[in-house]
Structure formats: structure tokens, C-alpha cells
Amino acid sequence: MLTEELQQRTARTIMRTYARFPVSLVRGKGCTVYDAEDRDYLDFTAGIAVNALGHGHPDLVTAIERQARRLAHVSNLFYSEPQVRLAEQLVAHSCADKVFFCNSGAEANEAAIKLARKYAVQRHGPDRHEIITMHNGFHGRTLATLTATGQPKIQHGFAPLPAGFVYANFNDVASIERRITPRTAAVMIEPIQGEGGVVTADRAFWDALQHLCRARGVLLIVDEIQTGMGRAGTLFAYEQYGIRPDIITLAKGLGGGLPIGACLATDDVARAFEPGSHASTFGGNPLACAAALVVITALLDGGLLEHCRTVGDYLHKGLQALRQHCALITDVRGLGLLQGMELAIAGQPVVLDCLARRVLINCTAEKVLRFTPPLIVTTGEIDRLLDVLSGVLKKQQAAHRQHV
Ligand SMILES: *Cc1c(COP(=O)(O)O)cnc(C)c1O
Image (cartoon, rainbow, N blue to C red; front, side, top):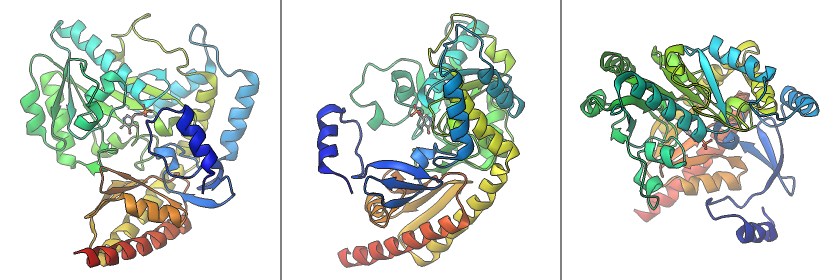
């Protein structure tokens, strides 16, 4: 699967932050990627919920090519039309009024944290700076966002962590309410805890959370970095919960594979930023924005949102059906094309067995298989995944029975 040479060169020069699969991918088309020996793999990871339009989508390639010839980057010292066009689309189709562009999810959340603090401190005084986030959540790897990430394993070794973050339980409004004090600036939360194991919360929770935040003058920041841009079957997952966040963060699927992040906010909140408050050299550069415009156009005008809902439902039902025949599966949950399957055993051996059968999936939270294919995935491709997964789980179950 991989030349040993590439593995060795990687070990010599790249920092050891990733446990990689022994595969080197060199090209892709649609939902299929190919390794250096031209073996094909069905891609149900989409670069961790990034490649919304799949690999090598002709419209995306054309737009990137065209923009690269014209102008790739100018910085924010100047006006840029692709950036404004993208912002206009995001604002027109969300409850937000203003956008700040950056280059990744962690940066989008950094912007959200800075904006929430600045707004709350201006409005209520210097003590109003705390952000409540959820245990088991994920918001990124910078110092502030790993502190916002309520997972000890991600924070370990990086003390001292920035002050001003407290943790509550997901899907538990009483636990959030207990942590609200005169110091609370905002609650920051994912619509679905993606890295935390595709964990969902019920609609009553979102209702009550919105109510609570309004009543206590606390901002609601929704981290849509994984769930946004159609992944959950609507442009933003929050739409399905009937809430109106004050701040929304995006990245992953936004650029269809090019690095871009965004922090969206209502006018009232966005006014807390003034020239000099925040900045990004690359943020919203014409190349990334041209790519993102293709993605959002496909979602809104190309029928991709409806497609995602239909095939997402098909995938969910297919995974549920496997559960009828496999005792190792303890839960199936998710929205649209962000689906998780919780197992009674570790997920990694299943992931490796699928890889050997040339289907790429991934595992989060130890026991949860996560399925995030490109949004253009077909029912035929879903059938192939289900077929392979069914075989792999049967084998695992037989092996497991022998052990117990
Ligand atoms: C991936 C992710 C992030 C971090 O994004 P990066 O681009 O890796 O910095 C933050 N929040 C959520 C919900 C994510 O899924």
C-alpha cells in the first residue's frame, strides 16, 4: 500500500503529530481516491468532512484554475469581490449579518471567542469574559480552542491554559444553567459533537438552551465547522433545531478542499470588532473564496442539499438495518451525511479491515465509526459501504465470540 521509503522520509522530516494509515493517496475523482499504485478506495471520510463536492469536481477545478490565473492572494489591505460575494451568500442564507474570514476551524473559533469577549466586556464590564463549553466537545487545537475543547486528553501537557473557560454537559440545560454567573459571556456548542463521537442532543434541549441564553444575556456560539455547509442536510444544522445563534463558525466543507474558515455574527454582536480588533493575512483570499462560492452554489442552486438529505436518510437506514443483524452495534445516530455507528468494541480494527477492502472510514471517541462521505455520494456507493461494513462486522463478531 505504501512505499516504505515515503514512510521513512515522513518520519525523518514531519513532526509526529499524526497516526497515519499506511496509504499514500495521489489522486481522486468523485467519491473515489487512488493510491500510488493506482488502487481505488471508496472515500467515506472526505478528508474529515471537507470535500463536499468530492474529488476533482469539474466546476470546482475550473473556478480554482480561473481564479489562480487572475489573482490568488492580495491580503485584506484591499477590497476583494470574491470575498464579498461569498459573504453575501452566507449572510443571505443564515441568521447572521456579518462575516470574518480566516483559514481553518480553530481560527474561526478563535475569532468567535475574541468577538464574544469583546462584545460582552464592552456591554457588561471587564468581568464578563467566561465561555461555557461542553464536556466531550471539540473546537480546535490552538491554545484557546483546545481549552474550549472539554477533553483532558487534548489539553494534557499544554498548561498553563488560557483562563475563562468552564465546562457543562451536552444535552443538559440544567448543567449549563448552573455554570452561568455574572462572568458568563457566551455558551459555545456544536450542533452535533462530531469528534466526540457523533453525539446528538434533542430538540427540547436546543429550545431550552436558546431560552436560557436570551434570558441571561449570554451569547450563543454555534460551532458548525463540521455540521455546516450542508453536511447535516440543511445549509446549517442549527436550522433543524429552530434556534438563532448570535455567532456561527464554519470551516471544513466551506472551501470544498481549500483551506478557509469563517466566523459569522449578528450586526449587534459584530459591531464589537473595529479596525485593528482582529485580522488574518490569508483570510478570505480570492482563491479560497472562489472555491467556496462553487460549493455554496451547488448546495443552494444545484440541488445538493436535497440530495444530501435523501442519501443521508438512505445511509442512516442502511446502518440501522445492519444493527438488526449485528450485536456489536450499540447505536446508530446522526443527521444527513454525518452519521455515527457506536460499537461495543474498539472501532479501529473495523476501520483497518474496511481499509483492506478499500473502503475509507474513520473512528472517533474509540468506539464510534464515523461516516462523512462527499455530499455527492450515490446510493450505489452507500450500498458498497454497507456491504463491506457488514462483512467486516460479521468477521469481527465471530472473532469476538471466540474471545469471550
Ligand atoms: C474540525 C473541527 C474544528 C477544528 O478545525 P481545524 O480546521 O482543524 O482547525 C473545530 N470545531 C469542530 C466542530 C470541528 O469539527
